[in-house]
Length: 134
Image 1 (cartoon, rainbow, N blue to C red):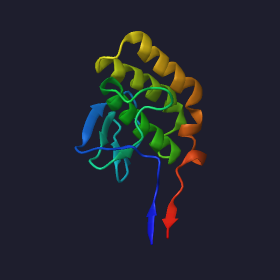
Image 2 (cartoon, one colour):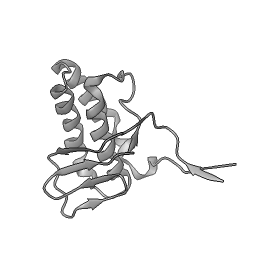
Image 3 (cartoon, rainbow, N blue to C red):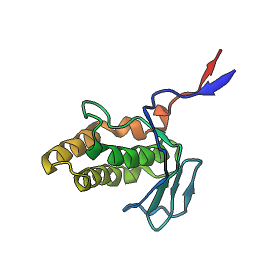
């Protein structure tokens, strides 16, 4: 028998690190994501995520932002990061997309979309279920 989760499209080949404006009171350490009190976010090699959501195409100017955003939302779903950081994570997505070449108007649309529709994805009730086979 195997146990797995579906819904992922991409897997990180090399670890990714960045500074974010989220400073948890205690370091957060999971199998795939690390976030310390200084705002140093590490997403480790092998992390899987689904890329940009909704009608947003999976383009080079949206992938790094979607990676960081998905990792932070995952920490919220797992109850490891307070949901009060949701807007900061949404704004980080916009900032990274702009840094990576997305135009400001499109990045603002991306921000508005996750800000309006993203709440369920940060909710612990939306954690992807474990599936067993056979």
